[in-house]
Image (cartoon, rainbow, N blue to C red; front, side):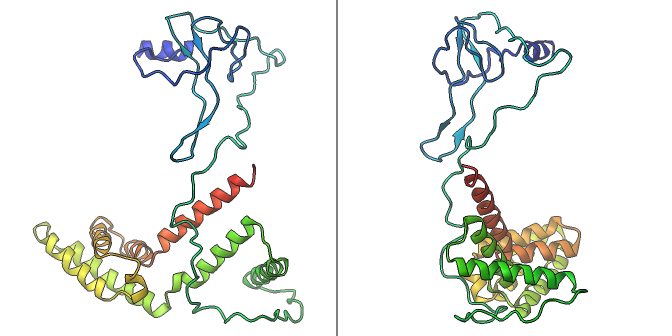
Length: 281
C-alpha cells in the first residue's frame, strides 16, 4: 500500500507492470498533455491516438513512461492565478473517438415489416384540419408535433441522419416489430405459466421442467417471431425465469427478449450514439 501511494504521488507507473506503447522521443522543453514538461533523457512521449486496423476504435494516448530508471518529470509552473487550482479538464474529445463500423443488427436497411398499427401510405399530403384546442392533452400536442416533423422530412426529401434515426425509432416503437396485441398477450400468459412452474419445481427436476416449458413456449410463438429466434435462445430465457422472483418483471423481460424488443432497443441506441458522435466531426 505504501508503494502504491508513492506511485500515485510521483505519477510514475509501476516498473513491474507492462509498459505502455512507446512513441517518439520528445525533445527537451516539450510539454506533455498533462502540463508536465518531458525530461530530455529517458522519457518516452505518449504519442498520438491511433486507430486499430481491425475494429477501427481509436486508442487513447497513454501516460508518459520512464525508461532507464531516470527521475520523475518535473511539474510545469501553473499558468493560473495564485490560489486558483488549474483546470482539471483535458483537451476536447470531439473527433478523438471514431465508432466502429455498424454491425448487421444496427438499424438494418432491409424492407420494413408490414404495418399493423399505421394506415397505408398514400402519395397525397394529409390535411391537418383546424388548430388544436387550447386545452389539448399532452398526447395530442406530441402527436401534432411529430406529424409536422414527419411531413417536413418528407417534403425536404433528404433528412439529416439524426432525423432519419428518429423516424426509425418512432416506427419501431409504434409497430412493435410487427407483433399484434393478441400475439403479445398470448406470449405473456405462456411466460407467466412457465415462470410459476419453474419457480415451484424442485431443483432435482429443473432440467426436465426447463425443456418442457421451452417446448410449450416455442410452439406458441408466432411465425414472424420463430423466424428470428432459435430454440436454444428460448431455453435460455426459460432458465432465467428461475432467478426472477417478481412474476411481472419476469413476464416483461422475457416477452421483450422473445419478441426482439430488447435487441431492437439496443440497435437503435447504438445508432443514436453513432449519429451523435459523427455529427461532431
